Image 1 (tube, rainbow, N blue to C red):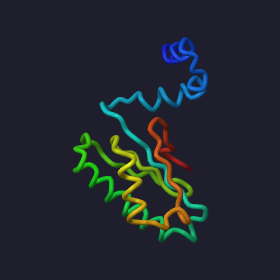
Image 2 (cartoon, rainbow, N blue to C red):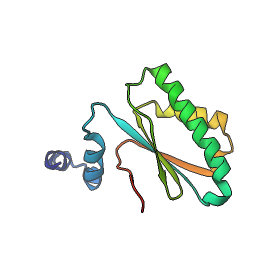
Image 3 (cartoon, one colour):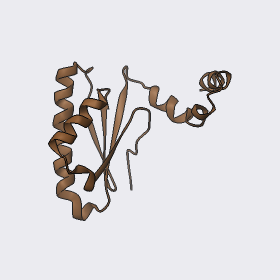
Image 4 (cartoon, rainbow, N blue to C red):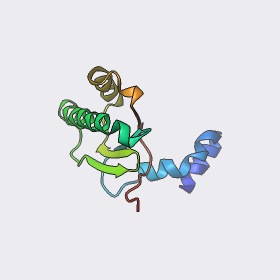
Length: 128
C-alpha cells in the first residue's frame, strides 16, 4: 500500500491517494483473478421485495450468460444478503454488457432497485 501511495504522490494523482485502502483491498486477493461486487439495494424491502427477487433472477442469469459468452474465469458467483438488498461477488466481467442486458430485461428497474458495480471494494459478510 505504501508503494501505491508513494507512486500516486510522485505522479501528483492526489485524488487517487484518498481511495488507496479501498483500491489495494479490492485488487489484493488470496484467489487468483479479479472479482467484482454488485451492490443491489431497494428503498423499502417490504414494498419492493418481489421486484428485488425478479432483479436478482435477471442479474444471476445475465452473469451466467456473460460467463459463457466472455469465457469468464472460473469462480463462484456468491450472493450475500444485506439489510436492504444483497451483494453479488463474481469474477470480473464486461460491465457494459451487463448494464445493457438489465436495461433490456428490466427497463423499469431504476424506479425500484438501485445497483452499483464495484471493481475494488470490500463487502459486508455478516450483519447481526
